[in-house]
Length: 237
Image (cartoon, rainbow, N blue to C red; front, side):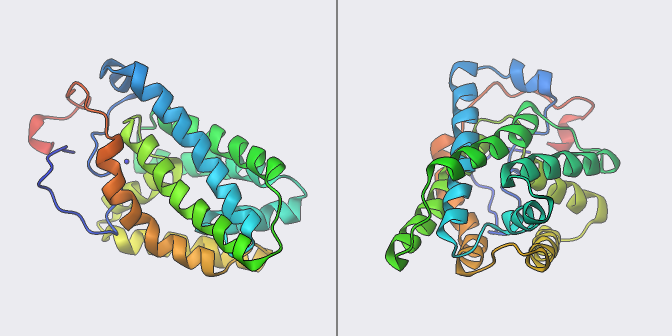
């Protein structure tokens, strides 16, 4: 979710975590500035779940993975947040053959985003007027970008799904945009088949979230002690 050099250019399809080192959970804690990083991490994760709920309540199209989560939830008769947590655990199991190292943020993401999504769905009414739906969709996308920049900038590791994409990119050698697109198209198609809501919100989220996060990330990026990732030489940084 590896250098912090500001001159490094990136395309919108490059993983948002690629500029941060793959530190172990212990190394992430040793990097310092916990008084800022931990509150920022958890505020970002809660906001992420609440803004995901905004998109769901707008009924104009969920974020790509939430199309799948909603479809599964409808068939199992459970909450979307519960499915989000369960899918996160399954995705983390997929990290094992990819030799990905989960961080504190990764594990926290797997639990808190689903709980916050359930909270948002419990307190947010579903608007019926189209202008209100559009406003809720826009707030969901913009707020989700802020939330993403917050939890990534705290430097506690990528979320389960982003880590899956970066891990597959490293193991297969495929361009990250191909890996990302393939995964998200697959989950959207499966979600639609199961009854998840796909719409303009899904498309807008997919094409705007990267460009929105890009300028926000420097605002939330926490400078920490530069620690050497375990088991790596400085040449690979």
